[in-house]
Length: 167
Image 1 (cartoon, rainbow, N blue to C red):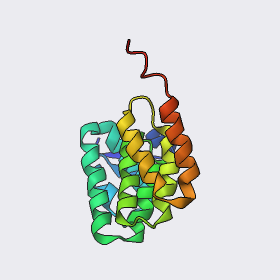
Image 2 (cartoon, one colour; image 1 turned 45 degrees about the vertical axis):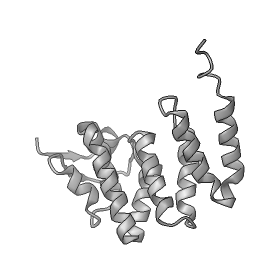
Image 3 (cartoon, rainbow, N blue to C red; image 1 turned 90 degrees about the vertical axis):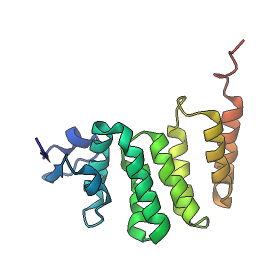
Image 4 (cartoon, rainbow, N blue to C red; image 1 turned 90 degrees about the horizontal axis):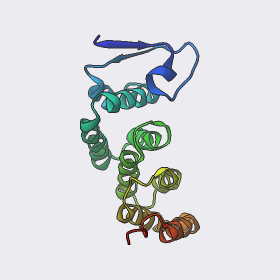
C-alpha cells in the first residue's frame, strides 16, 4: 500500500478536517513530501505527522533538514512551515521545539520564533528535562515582549516539586 488516500483527514493526521479535501500521501516518500515546498502546508504537515508515526527514529533528521534549509535560505515559506509545525503538527513537543529554536537562531529579532516558544512551552511535559526547559525559557527571555511569560515559566520550573522527592 504505497499510497494512502485520505478523505477523512482526521483519521490520517489527527489534525485537519476541511470537508471534501482529498490528500494523496505516498507513504514510501513521505520525507520527500515534507520538504517539497510546492505542496500545500497542510499536506506537508500531514506527511510529517504520518512520517513520525511510521519512521519515529528518522523524524529528527527530517526536522533538522528543514531547519538547515531555513538557516541557509531564510525563505518565508520555510519560516511559516517551521511555525506551522509548532502550532499544528502532532509530533512530540520536543521535536517541535527544535523548529522554534531554528526560527530564533536564524533571526533573533523575528517575533515568530518567540511566539512559537510561548505557544509550545506549556506542551513540554515531564519527559522533557529541566535543563532543556531552562534553555528554552532563556531563549524566550531574549525577546522583551515575552519577558513576563518567560519569568512565569521560570518560576514554574523552580516551583516544580516532582523532582525533589529523591530522598
